[in-house]
Amino acid sequence: MEFRYLGNSGLKISAITYGNWLTHGSQVENEVAHACVRAALEHGISTFDTADVYANTKAETVLGEALRGERREDLEIFTKVYWPTGPKGKNDTGLSRKHIMESIDGSLRRLQTDYVDLYQAHRYDTETPLEETMQAFADIVRQGKALYIGVSEWTADQLREGHRLSRELGFQLISSQPQYSMLWRVIEAEVVPACEELGISQIVWSPLAQGVLSGKYLPGQAPEPGSRAADEQMGKGMAGFLREEVLTAVQQLRPLADQAGLTMPQLALAWVLQNPNVASALVGASRPEQVQDNVKAAGVRLEPDLLAAIDDVLGEVVERDPGKTAERAPQTRVV
Ligand code: NDP
Image 1 (cartoon, helix red, strand yellow):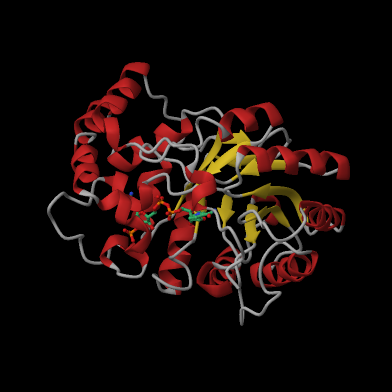
Image 2 (image 1 turned 90 degrees about the vertical axis):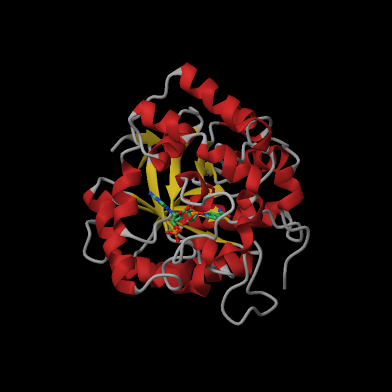
């Protein structure tokens, strides 16, 4: 495993992070969830990402159970706050002081730990003054409940303002968690340059475009049973990646992966890790074999001519519009 510093901090994390969105507490049985975590640990993954909202808090419980007994110092555990949880009452959401303070305690209890290494704002809250949010994060860091603070899907301007306040309040905002893959490159124009300037790393989600870049979804064919796209609920967010022209272009990556001696998932993961602002690729898995395949992307260097060939093959199906970060962000809280 390769380890990288997270932002301008002394914290090292594994270049592949194991994430449990849609899997733990929902898609897979606990036994499979535990086997995936075990495979991750055996292959050198030390960084684990979850969120209170995943499976309405159940994902944190499953991860906490799966990691029980591991030496805490060997792990980096990340979670998040923002989306509504529990009975979804009026204050069970957002980045108010009340919701942050209550949420961190719930997450620590479910994860069976005294602190998380990284506590992340899962989205930007347009309804809470940013000063209030950042003060709450500063207090959580002082209480020792989180060691560092990160955010997810914030725009470059929001990152700048959050970073400025964190400096004033004496804590470190060190990470940004956006979607990033060969097919979704919207952070390259604005978010990445801002973060390079501020000393913030990216921890990128859906680097396999939810499995599409593994090449297992074939144009003109129904998704294989048991895969994410085959499930009506889970597949909802994948429609853009399951278009014929995208699936056709993705199949053309196969000879490039073969030439490089990599599997398709390894090529996709190694690709995001070529960006020096990316500290880690956040990978989900519904089976331990997927983890075993994916971890081998760590430490792989892709030659410039291969990167150029990937750009050629994918051409117009790549989304690059930096406006998508703001466009996809919630404009108001959902409850
Ligand atoms: P990926 O793009 O890595 O997709 C993972 C899914 O792809 C797996 O669950 C599996 O689905 C399939 N897959 C994985 N490996 C392979 C393989 N080797 N061969 C074939 N199929 C494979 O990432 P996710 O979309 O799961 O996101 C990863 C993590 O990112 C999450 O767990 C979470 O921690 C984080 N995240 C953060 C968000 C945010 O807003 N901050 C949003 C979304 C995710 P299957 O087998 O079911 O087809």
